[in-house]
Length: 87
Image 1 (cartoon, rainbow, N blue to C red):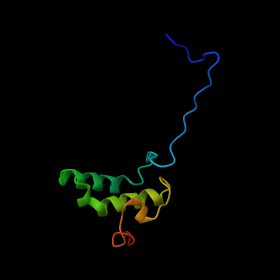
Image 2 (cartoon, one colour; image 1 turned 90 degrees about the vertical axis):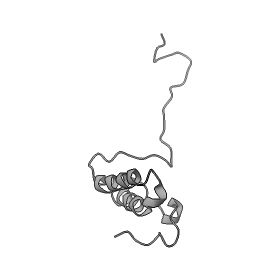
Image 3 (spheres, rainbow, N blue to C red; image 1 turned 180 degrees about the vertical axis):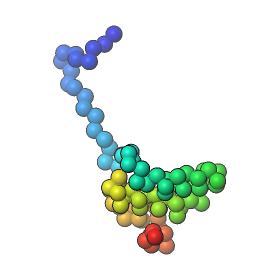
Image 4 (cartoon, rainbow, N blue to C red; image 1 turned 180 degrees about the horizontal axis):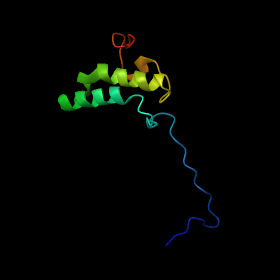
């Protein structure tokens, strides 16, 4: 059995990654767009290239609600044609 406090060792304090950290949407602000995206994936045999519009809508919602950092669309894998504003 080990103890949480051991002598001579530094305490490990985990830090979240700069990228890849995805805070939970506790308020459900983006639940509608997330559900739409997940249904699209299900209906297209998990082929995410068929759901680019839904993915962009979901990411846009997350950025608008401060659930992720605002990024340029090209950095998120959307080309110039895909980078037009989501309505």
